[in-house]
Amino acid sequence: MRTGQDWSRMLQIDPISVLLHSGNSAVSFLARRDLLDEQVGRAAEIWEAPAARRLLARQQADGSWRPSGKKEEVYPPHHHTLVETFKRFRILVQRYRFTRESAELARAAEYLLACQTPSGDIRGMIGNQYATYYTGLILSLLVDAGYADDPRIETGMRWLLSMRQDDGGWTVPILTRRLDAPTICRITSEYAEPVEPDRTMPFSHNWTNMVLLAFAAHPAYRDSEEARAAAILMKSRFFKPDYYTSYQAPSYWVRFAFWWPNLLTALETLASLGFSASDDDIEDALAWFVGHQRGDGLWDVSYTLGKSGKSIPGKPEERLWLTLRICRMLRTYRTL
Image (cartoon, rainbow, N blue to C red; front, side, top):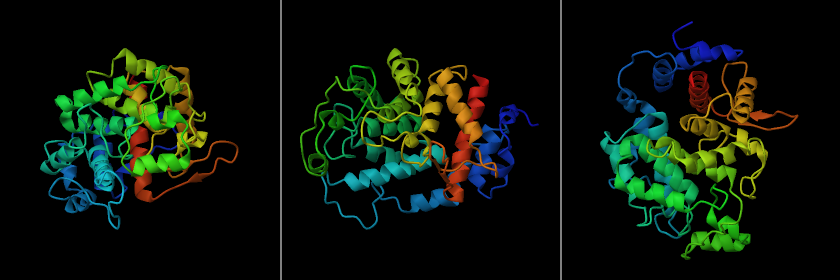
């Protein structure tokens, strides 16, 4: 067994060989570096991966990506462009390990930060409303890309702290006011003053999961009392329904689409915040991953909780990237 690979003994099938021989040069490179501790060179080598270059070929001069086939008919006018830029930025940072050393990524980062308000939140993902969850996720990506010391990141982190519920977690402010669907549609697609949260309403584990990504990424905040308290709240809800109707079903914990938070993002965050596998909630979550590996050594992108245990495998490329992340996470907990 290669150095650093003992964590894989908990699995029925060693997935590393599958990752190494997948035909995806970026996945293979990162598996050798992150799972086998091989000296493979700088991560910038995979910036030239064909998939990454195809993404960058469509980048605009201002650093953004434009959505195809959509008109800017919502408020603010940059809404769809902001969403599209966030999606592409996330792929480049999380998968291909782009940093601000890349001129293309630096332009994209400046576009995202241009959507930050003086208060610190990233505005435009849901109209003119506060988007605590997207602000947390976008800040985490910026920190991972090398912007931790940027004063705009500090402003954003302080804003997130100011937006906690009374219980110490986070939610989306408009959800705390029990507005009907037509009203929510209107105030997120037209100009409307931001809805202030009802702080007495409970936290959402989904959106706390997304916000905590920023705290887990930031070296100056990951040891904060506020982050640890919110993390304890989040993990207490593993495999349970969310308090809010948006993405409420327990099965969202085990749907690993690239877009939304789930059990994997929660475990990655908890590891960065210093929690270990000896924690009962984390132990149960790790056991779920060990028990749901497929016969080909990979994991599927979506599962159903309960007796049926049905899953949606997903595209082969998505399964490779997901399996790489799961392997990283499992290895991390073996070393804590």
